[in-house]
View: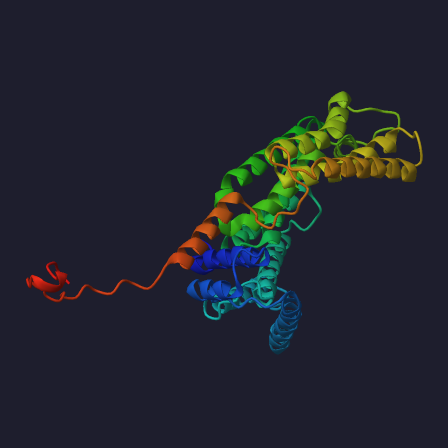
Length: 392
């Protein structure tokens, strides 16, 4: 499914690990150069500044090309405003994207990024224009519930085809929005089941990403979706979000009016960030750990929004000071590694990857030239003098 050369992708991952090993002093510059030549990567991947420049330049070129073509065809009635014309431009952009990746081997160069977003935007605009053309241009629920599934499929395809992290996130968020807009048709009943539905879907997506982590080519996509699934899962049960969502779907609530199962959503709001932190420490998962630390501030903001014990600045300052104190204590505690945890920065991502690299380095270091083929030996003498009685 992925368009990029898988051998080059594996070699690129290997080269990144070798460069980390070189920075740590495990291999010399000569060994690094030799291994990079043995495991080449043929992608065109410029630095970040060139990537941004090529992204902007490609957008300018495609914009001028599309504008010139539209100007040439402007005499044809309603052509350039028709969804078919936008779809045509989107297909042309996608064909150019396929060609530049396959023939010129662009890999996150800025050119392929710009063409991918151009093609996706034009195809989505064509679909929205088609819905408007058939009379569904109002802001009814059916309109959003039809746009979101198409966006989910389109962004999911680009994520699978080009391993794009943002497209993977957009695909996941489109799924969540589809659930939200579809549930609005149930009216007040939606507020009863929608939070739990989004929590279950977010949890399912998270564990699916954990299971799929073995597919290294999509590692960045899976990590991004994991982060957003954790955040969306928390937001779906956050008291403030649930209350506002209920007001949006059914009718606004009074300031002193609670929501059904309020105790559950308050427990979810306060406890879940600490569950994330505890799970991250237990499983040595930095994604869970950092997500939990971020959501502690969200829990403090939610609590302060309904219980005015002190000004919001003071509450956030107090929470921040508590987190700093906790971090400082953990840093002091982990100066000496304990049970797999350490404060020291580790440059390797996974132990298995390090083992693979070390095995490769050892193999390359101790591998010598091939043994010379065995040639006929000189004949042994049977002369009894001079001690020469065996094969020479």
